[in-house]
Length: 473
Ligand SMILES: *Cc1c(COP(=O)(O)O)cnc(C)c1O
Image (tube, rainbow, N blue to C red; front, top):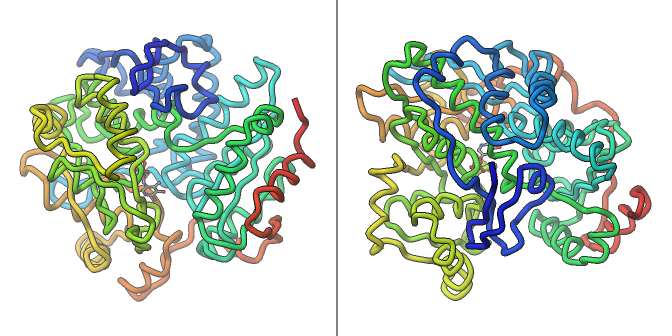
């Protein structure tokens, strides 16, 4: 299997070449040259597999530069009951007539980013050891991504993590999760500023190319192809739980921000998994809902990006969206390059409403969309609690609301649960008047000793910290 850029650079790369990279050289994102097809016979054969072995089957269609037995061991080491709390790893439960909830949120940080990041940690360690290299991961987080990255990379050979976050702005639970890690290779940096200041620091350090090269600076952001690929697996796992007889389609409703999660659903669907609709659920930050309704992709300014009660979906642009546009436009890289460079740079938007292929987003690719507000979220959390005695988190509630609005009556819908309610206790208390349940092992984490350094928003200070801890190449 080979990979190409969405912006027309035809140079084909192998999986392990792109594993440790972010963007392609021309600024595009990587996609496989084609989507391997999964037959009904293969789905029947995959029904009885453990999640880890199912992951191996899916991944091995895309990865041919890691020996099969090594890849199988990496999957088995990643998807364990110890790490994900249940033997099924991503179990599906019923939530009313034709509606299901798939838990992607039982990993170490209680949010779905663990599903991919835990595998990424093992893949990085494996590939770095093979090359005899080290990697220093520098990131900015407002919550979920940073903690998932730290829990995936803690204790890994050859890897250090330098994670910036806005001082005092993450939820107390999120701060406790990250800052209580005592591993020597994890460095928490609380920046006296907002999330944008953290991102600016990461950009400033990464654009110093000499420093970047000398200290082998890398990232784990959501455009990484390996992360997206790991997420394809749970669409298969969800389908096989709802349709064990492989006897009809399933739709998925996906709480969406950077379009990584639902893009993995798109890949699964392109592989032939019988998915009817892919429901893109947004909150008040509705860039994606607007596109699927109108054909106009309009990036928001930071002043126009709202802080909401489903904060992991608060985005101004959707960094993985370019992958879908590439497929929608029949993989015309030059056109995609124009849209995402001159189009967005000049106007902050592009318009596909007059392109004859825009209706395909719905008819050929199965996308529908919807939007949810704080009031919807609270009402949905209440109704799911009173009707089904289940507490769902605010992001899952956004998708639940959109699932009910978009569904076709005869097709079951799987709502992806992307976080556990305990991570967003404030909204749960507002909706239900009670504190959400705390899973075993998370009691009293706020009182644990913390490892974090508070810093002024200055890239030079972060560079100094990296110099102090990392070996120069
Ligand atoms: C990251 C995240 C999302 C958004 O997922 P994307 O892949 O960025 O679309 C939704 N919910 C939660 C809880 C998240 O952490």
